[in-house]
Length: 383
View 1 (spheres, rainbow, N blue to C red):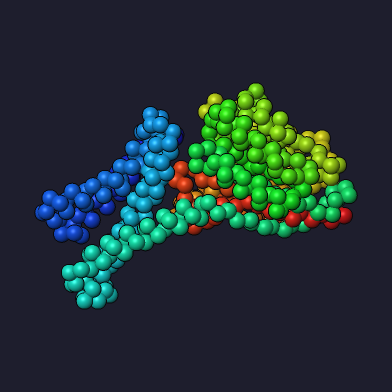
View 2 (cartoon, rainbow, N blue to C red):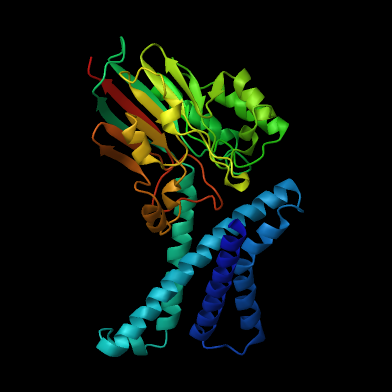
């Protein structure tokens, strides 16, 4: 499936690149000067071919060179996408104008109009990319408050901090993790929950140690708990180096298991289904069998799925991530159709779902149309 999606995206990317190159060349009047041709196609090649070059060269280039090419490739890919969308919008306006005639003649007939439109497109795209890069590095705290109509032992309320989709790796480095610890120190939560995709893939031993050394500094009265995400390859095995280091750091990874915490509430952690080898996961009904469901039930699941099962089995709060809210506008229009809720809070009777936009990034190191976040939840109980 991933191979099919990659092929479709590559074909789409090639089409967008062809469209941009051809439209730009005609907008410049197809200059005959060798200098102009060299400058134009040189810049065009730098823009278009950086992304496929990064994908091909990431396994062959030195770490530093590969990292910078990956970053530039991500920026250029998003840039190509936005240039294509803007040019497509401009061409649609031109088509409509042929039928309606709403664009003033002085604009259509002015010889510098194509150049002005091209400059405007470039300025808009560059500004958007610069904003997206800055935005991705400046997380916010998303605050929620809810009331659960259950008793929780002596607890009147619970302060939860949840973070998903850190994607620790080449882009999301130790410096970004230190910023996360600083935010958590300011929040002073009772419990910290990591809702999957802690890493961006396989983590080498040295990087796994760096990661867990920082995560081990997260402050929480009841501790730090995590569930695996689709990128957390090292957490698929309990014997992996990362699993061992997380345990040493006091972080408990829940994979289809349930814990009673402080005689006050239950925390249920679901494993990520591994579709490639048809290994499923335990149903919620089996996970909570035999527990005291009169206490609050908190479910940690990387993807915001199986909502009906969670609601029907008395889950009071489900915490998820995974969606990134599309990360790059307008992909949020797709995630909004894929999931009943791709960001924010949903309430159905006594069931609550909170989906985070995530802390890190996957692919291009940009966020446009949403912000990276740490989720802070005040959960009150009716005692």
